[in-house]
Amino acid sequence: MSDPLRVGIIGAGGISRGAHLPNYQKCGERVNVVAIADVAKDRAVALAEEFSIPHAFGSFEEMLTEVDLDAVSVCVPNKFHAPAVIAALEAGCHVLCEKPPAMTVAEAEQMAKTAEKAGKILTYGFHYRHQPEVETLKRFTEAGELGDIYSARVHAIRRRGIPGWGVFTNKELQGGGPLIDIGVHMLDAALYLMGYPEPESVYGRTHQKLGNRKGVGLMGDWDWENFSIEDMAIAMVTFKNGATLVLETAFAANVEKADVMQVSLMGDKGGADVFPLKIYQEKHETLLDVTPAYLPKKGGHELEVQRFVECCLNGTTPVSVPEQGVALQKIINGIYESADTGEVVRF
Image (cartoon, rainbow, N blue to C red; front, side):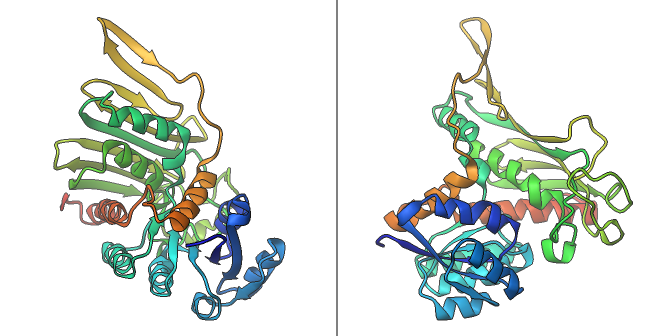
């Protein structure tokens, strides 16, 4: 595929405006964003005018029919990920889809199968994989510096960080709350650093204690009277290689810090906290704490989009692949199923 890459955007919300469009523009002459579609066509038109995009549509079906595209970013609510992704792939486009992959495991599997059949790239917006802390630690784990990683802890917790915009508190459109919005980022980062081990079982609990009543909002006022998601999820995942992972994620919790995003790993040769990166080892009869003196400054969203473009143009494999999306979706849906039934879910 030759330059420039002709890109279309499905969804004219905040993630398109704040992450995808500006970072496509940073790719310069290698990318030409030529179309944007949203069910609220006026939003698509407004964003098209802001970013000098020549075409705006009221549906992705119309965009895919009317404009010749090489690649698409899917930035719509989670409920609509699968139909948009599948349509774009079948139209011959490579696809960068925002997280989480889908609403169900069956949808994630269908998306993966469609990408394989079409011979097109399907990758997901796990931008924390592109953060310098994760990239650095990945090199250490692949070199065996941590040894056998047998335990992980994942935290994605806000004190009062319920989004006061969009559809983040609407279970029908999103599928869930902090687990599938912020928890999924840290869960994916942990699994990526662990080598994406095959899950064996999951036991989960969800809580709705703070979001369904009026309170202080550090991210704007939310519609607490129609709050249909969990405000906290807790889970333990076991893997077939013997490893375990404990996850805690919340939009609202009575904790000290306003926002904590952290992955902690423990292996038989070393351990690590990722944000900020610190590695713990025992060498030469000495306990060591190792911190990098320098890390690159380029952000995860910028690298995510840049590398998607490079993969499309060069035919290389992206860092996030559909099979991992299916595995992640199994764990997410397993947590919700376990929370609903009170039972351990086995895969």
